[in-house]
Image 1 (tube, helix red, strand yellow):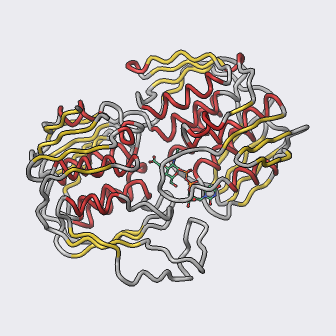
Image 2: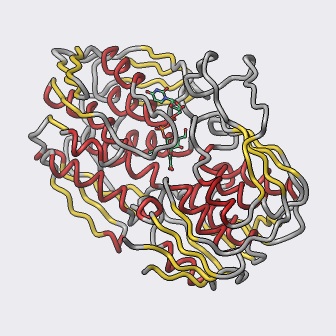
Image 3: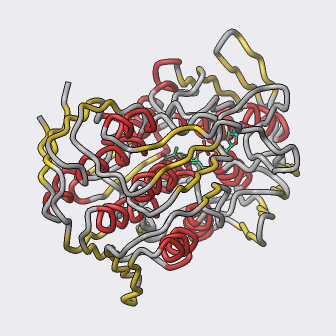
Amino acid sequence: MAHFRINGQQPLDGEISVNGAKNAALKFIAASLMFDGPVTLTNVPNIEDVRRMLSIIAELGATVAYEPEKNYVRIDPCTVTNFEITEEMAKKIRTSIMLVGPLLWRFGKACIGYPGGCVIGRRPIDLYLKGYQRFGAELRVDGDTFEFVAPELHGMTFIFPVISVVATETFMLMASRVSGTTVLKNAAQEPEIDDLIDFLNEGGARISRNGSIITIVGVATLSQSKPYTIAPDKIEAATYAVLGIASGGDVTVSSIPEHFIKSFNETLIKIGAGVEDKGNGAWRYFHQPMIATDIETGPYPEFVTDWQPLMAVLLTQAKGVSTIHERIFENRFSYMEELRKLGAKISYIEKDIPDPDTHYHFNFDPEKEYQQTIQIQGMHKLHGAVLNVSDLRAGATLAIAALISKGQSYIHGIHHLQRGYEHFVEKVKALGGDIQEL
Ligand code: EPU
């Protein structure tokens, strides 16, 4: 199996241009099936998850022209004939669940196996099942297969009991073509949501967002008049920012709007890391002495869960004891044991008794025990080790950790990282990192 060999402790310097957001591109691919004609997307990241999502819609019959090196894709949804997402297709990627919406709208029926995705928690699909039924679909569950029949779809009101990014997006794109008005309350507010709204509205949809309330009036046609450029990736931006700071280097990340990474930058400034706004969406990140802090993840615009593994590496180099409290997923510390192999002093806090007044964002069960908080003792020198990656962001985290460690590291399971990072090895090398894919 492919793996990375990394020789650490080179300060990384230079400029990185961030690619289009994975977590936007995947939804645009699903949304393209709601259009009446071909859709062209640019700034599509050249990553495994995009290939997986495109392969699923191609199996459904869509005509797909993908030029990964040009970050270009053209999708013609008019050739879709298949309404069945088999278990094998669904397991490829969690966003396969979004495709039920377009299939229901096109055929009045759809079928899907249980979707896959990173193992960072239970990853339930109850919200999707409820939402599809609220749009008017009937559901039949046969083992791990979900069959929907929709004689007629209509708008609905949905109050999210737990904020969900992909479920918000799924209901938005579906609502844009069903009769009547849909109102989504306590909806997600990520920049990727606004990007999807802009994309659909450019095609003729009628969607407006007011804070956490999204209103969608169904329209009779959706058609694209010019290619749509996907907005940049706020998680990739944070990855290279952390790499620059933690390695003792100086990295400028270009083309990322301020509000995409506001709470991330604020946290960096709080711990003393170097952050400079160079204007026009360019941000310079550089090393300065850092102090410990306490971080809690939350839905955007709070500090998002995807940034916490990256921050954990940075906090190994900050003076004092830091804590990270994860509130979105139940199992997002898989990287912890691996960081310990490098010499990091990092552990679950001994008494992690959840506060019943804390608003948990996963379906919190007060009867169950959770370990949601880690503590990191800073300023320990890290050394090379053999590491195993078990999810996408853990992959980037461990690569950064190896890059700041003394000596050689080997990282296995890099296919997880390649699901979401375009040309990771080339970009790190361009900044001066010693990394090889073997
Ligand atoms: N949830 C439910 N029921 C559902 C769906 C979600 O209880 O039916 C819960 C989840 O268990 C979780 C919470 O809701 O506790 C929030 O999960 P959400 O649905 O928002 O996650 P997601 O939409 O599946 C997206 C990103 C993740 C990112 C989260 C942040 C995509 C493709 N994925 O996942 O990105 O961490 O939002 O909320 O947009 C990544 O890029 O590495 C990644 C995992």
